[in-house]
Figure 1: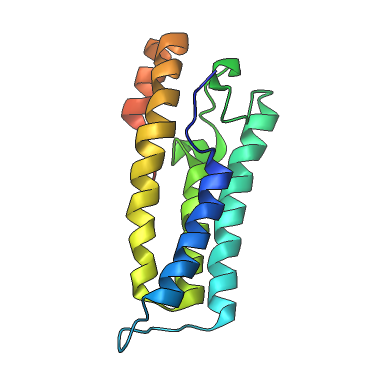
Figure 2: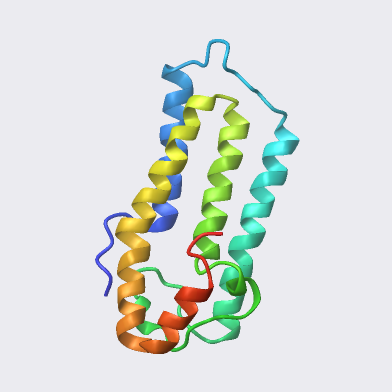
Length: 151
């Protein structure tokens, strides 16, 4: 079992909460690029679609979507959206956070995006990849060398 510090979905919610706090206590004063709600909804919808396409491929291949138990994976999914990203579910969460930046209209909230990427790389993706290398060996190394981690 992967010893997660913070599960990805909870990290997403915490990140949105931090954005809200930044927006409230660190106003943009002249840097504000407030966009309309429809743009934020459109971007968020793209993130949801990408994430769901990732989930769909896992379901289609009868493998686990549980981020706590990557050792339960029974195959390397390389079809569909996984031809373009090794982590489309996490890309979907990142796009959702980008939608929150648009919604808040405060560029200071964007500082959360690289922090999210860093945390996910260090505490989620690297441990998952280590487990996948151990379980699938050469097949995973080949997939890893041909498809980018994010986009």
